[in-house]
Every structure is written in C-alpha cells, then in structure tokens.
Amino acid sequence: SIVSTSYFIREGELDETFRVAELLLDDEQELMHKAVGSWLRHAGKTDQERLLVFLDTHAPQMPPTMLRVATQKLDNNQREQYRKQY
Image 1: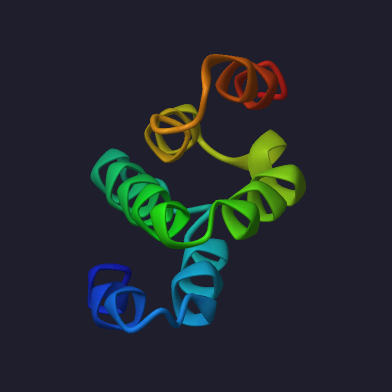
Image 2: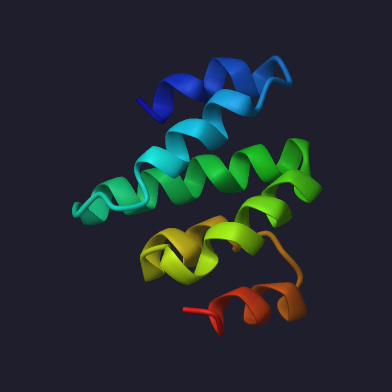
C-alpha cells in the first residue's frame, strides 16, 4: 500500500503517503520498515517540512530501520536529533 502512494507523491499530494506510513508504524516486517522509510524519504524530497513534522510526532515510536531510511537525506544534525529519540 505504501508503494502505491508514489503516484500521489509525483503529483505533489503527500497526505496519503503520510497517512499510510502512520498506519504501518507498528508493522512487524523489516522489509515493510524499509519500504515505509524510503517512501517517507521520497515524500520529504517534495516537502521536507512535512517530513520533519511527521518525524517530530512519530520518531520515538518508529522502528530503527524505518527511521534510519526516512532520515537519510536530512543533514547530519537533523538525522542525529531524530535517531537519538529512538
């Protein structure tokens, strides 16, 4: 379901990506963590502020892999700030 949001990201509509990502925060599968993190990162390329708001809210509960992948394109200080919350 998270991959299907790529269409919306290309169209500049990020609501669905962040909504689905929030639903999948508790998923137990490592591959799902990577997928959600990568689409969050991709959405952040379109609207970094929106990604930061999402991370401010959800970083402490995100699985480490999801958080690591989602924050890969942030600057070092931001990345460390969120990773310390885990």
